[in-house]
Image (spheres, rainbow, N blue to C red):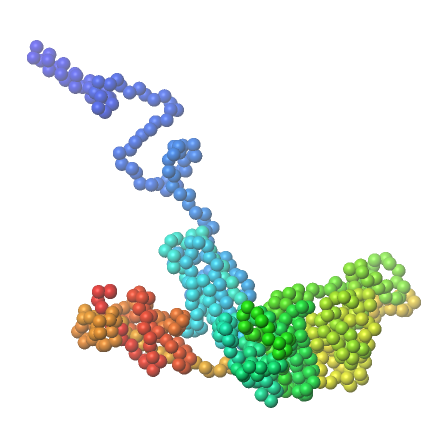
Length: 634
């Protein structure tokens, strides 16, 4: 009986080991085997490490449970592709950038990438270079521009290089955003612009002051100015007494010019209510050789082109159109800007665009060219005479041979070939002009030195100038550079191809070839004046556990050697009083950094340490500076 009981217990234990029971219910029935195809939910006790797509295939979309959070989709591989300028992560491999253009897009690949670009900035007075960066929201870009080891400009969104900065400039672009830069890009815009008016001339004032060139009220007291420079002037009377300038303030200037060089003389950026008249004097201070009142119909600014007949000094007079009448406006301003620049210079091209915008004058459009001969092999019979002129009014103007001409009676140069078209200027008798070729009805297109824009005059007011009359009628008034000289007029020839002669022997095609002498090449600009002096400052940053004297946070007293410690890797900046960074660097293990920059004599400079928000003035005569920082700030 005893052995029987033991056998029953052993059998029961063995049976319980073979039969699976759900956890916590020992009396439950055995779980049935799932039917093939039904989903089985398995909850692991330990979450396995994420597997790569190469280990497990991507699950189909239908297998993802509803409401489950899926991992973010990987960014496309194109986001991590370097841009076209790579590799340009050093100044030695800087990527060239064009001027007056938008370049890009560029990327920051890899994450710690820095892009270097090369700019070839030409030397041109009164033209500054503006560099602007446009980036997506995930980038925090900082720009620095250097010439050799000299920092010339820095900024977060844009840089402005002064007209004195010319030559090779290396631009560095770095990303200061700690987030990943994948899928982010930026573009760089480089523009050459005329320097804006100075703050002194643009600031609103109840009683404006005269300009810096006063008192230049006659040619005896005329102020000499340079070619290619923009001047901020005004019509404010230099004499503060009432009615001291009854005829209004007149500005007289003297400009040195070169023979056969064509110049643009223009006023622009006029204050509200200012209307200017420009007159040029050559060889005679009483009779003007050329002048202009309005560049465009109903405008205020004046502009004209003029060719110097020889080396000498050009007299320029700028007068207010309203004379001595005092205007009552919202602001008592009378400022304007003036520039005299060679037509072939960059400043003249920028000026022409700017004065067209301010005068609401559209840019010139090229007239369609008229075909004067039938196509070869067209099958049309050759009559030996040129084709008939196309009648005016069908959209295609007639053309005549270009060349010099003379105004035979006083006439008005108009903008369009109509009697009621806007007038550009009045041409006196014996005024030399140049025939441009197009003809519309009884109107002929001409160019004149009295107007920067070409215009139209009636054919009855014109007469072609022969070689003799051209040589004898050239006086103090200068002819435009597009007018052919006597040598060029003599070189005009008519060529009759033998292949186009008719059976009768007459020519079926006559092509006129005009040879015009080019303007002489402008002389190379002289070296820039040495107006700055080199300045070097050695800054040492030390830490001390003894508070500085005077109760301030910082102290300039040098502590004893055993009481101070050099502080390295601290950014120190040399800045102007306006906050512009002139030079910067990190202190070495000895706590010292050398700051170098060319500065103007008498400039006010400060030393700044951005880590602590500290800024202090420094004297130009000082060559070394020791800054003591309490150890509590470290």
